Length: 221
Ligand SMILES: Cc1cc2nc3c(=O)[nH]c(=O)nc-3n(C[C@H](O)[C@H](O)[C@H](O)COP(=O)(O)O)c2cc1C
Image (cartoon, rainbow, N blue to C red; front, side, top):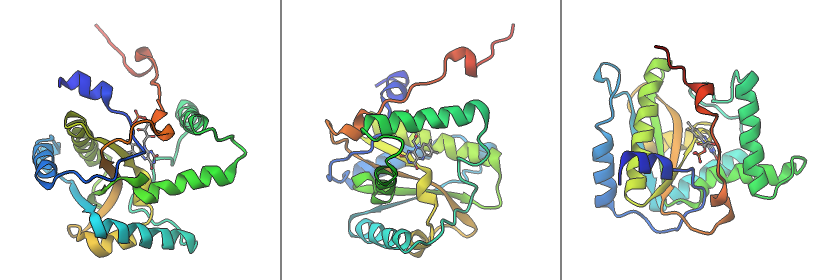
């Protein structure tokens, strides 16, 4: 598969088969993802993958936290902070496309919340990864994390797998930290649930468009 094809084939997939990825394949993918570039080659990422029994226990524990009314405590400001103008509009359009595909009207708050909660069920994926970086680092180092994330997602596509990056998985870190053994000083920046796509599921019919080239690119000569 060519890179162009992998980039165009990747979409956020939120419905998965229960089948686990063979560990040797997972290791091969993660080994290749290590080659992502970073500022001064600092490689500030750490990726903890939780599967099997541990994944089931983690889901239960995070759900209990959320249902008890615990407030989110992300290590980094969430991605929806400071959105104005066109960015706020795109966020709105994203939500409308998502809920629209799922047949949820804007006023159906309970249904929207139920869909939101699926984030902490890891959308049924057999594997959930938590991507962290040092809390002392700033946005420029965050670029490294983004590059690593996309590298990983494209490798999964190449291997016939699918994924969903999730900022929501940074909201309730306490239970993750009990099992994840993150490097000293790291905070979770986002999660990635992944596995094999369950084809035909309505939630996998969500297709997000992109702004036209001229809105996000400037060519000067
Ligand atoms: C860093 C990051 C965090 C995201 N967080 C969530 C999330 O918490 N829940 C979710 O359902 N989708 C999440 N998404 C998926 C985006 O909504 C999705 O990438 C965007 O709408 C474009 O759609 P596409 O990935 O299908 O191309 C996230 C994506 C990124 C890159």
